[in-house]
Length: 295
Image (cartoon, rainbow, N blue to C red; front, side, top):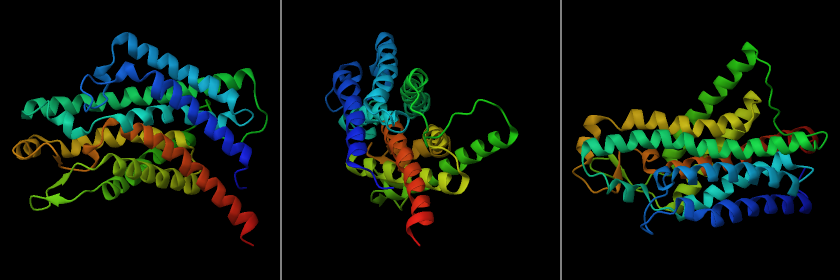
């Protein structure tokens, strides 16, 4: 069940569409005035935000047909790949903290980042809706992509809720481990990770989470992707407390109470979505290998 060269080409095309349209062409929509500044939702105007959502819908739609007949499986990579370019070009969380030196300013900033994570998640969702819309117009027949079931059942709801919780716990633990820079001040705080380390940490963490919930809960990658916003919100509520902010305010802006709160929402959501899909398909590939190739 290895990837054929044709499917590798389809994946490359889907990623390229997202990178070109969202990552590069739409970059001015969210580009910070300061070249070293972070990418955040407040960089967008209202018109820019609406345009970005429309582009995400279009990119998902186009990527489906460019990677047909496996558009449902591959087309969903386009939008998070485009946001990943923004995440890499963005400045760091430490740069953002320099704009909020006071305790009250930092608490308010973190509250805004919680809301911001759901906007980036909405962008990913619009790309997925674009893929599903294209699939409705031209179904590709049999597919092993996760199916969206609209009929309610208690069992399905509980499985989804449990998958969301498990994904959040696994991803949170893994990100804290992989993105943990040198500690200081009696190991109370961690230093700002480099962008490359953030990319690896979030991708690896959500790949592990996506693999686990598919392998053991048979849940799809949607719940793992959504858990990225849950992790951000929970971590901010847990680590960004009044007393913690007061303590860390006397130290350089490059130090944080947890590695998770040193990662920008756009970085967590973009690479979390890509890692979730990767983990899902690794679990599918592992199960196929276990049943057919390990004997």
